[in-house]
Image (cartoon, rainbow, N blue to C red; front, top):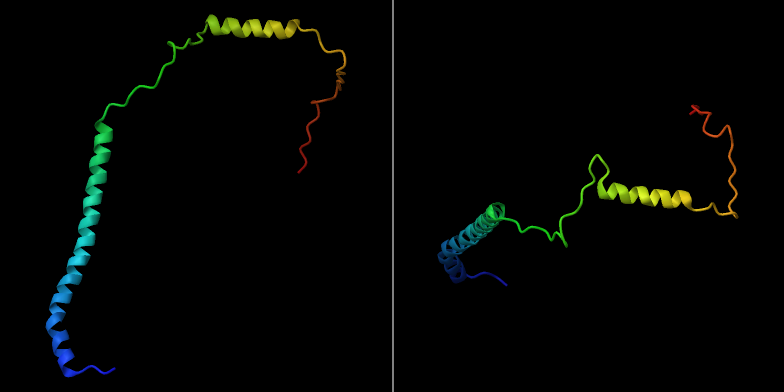
Length: 108
């Protein structure tokens, strides 16, 4: 299929319009990207300035273990005593090696 001279005349007259359309499409993509970046930045700025909602604290304030032990320290002490008071299971045999943990192997 050959191109006739009339087709060339039509193409040359429309070439500037095609060039303008191509340039507009390229600029449109850049403008869209700039708009999206500004929206993301605005959204980020709003999140930074917003006051965050506090997390649910449950029924009340949690108790904190202080240096003197406090209530949690007392509960831990009670659990430790309960474990100590349990009689050792008779079916378990404990074998202890007096040399266990005394020798260090430093070879590579």
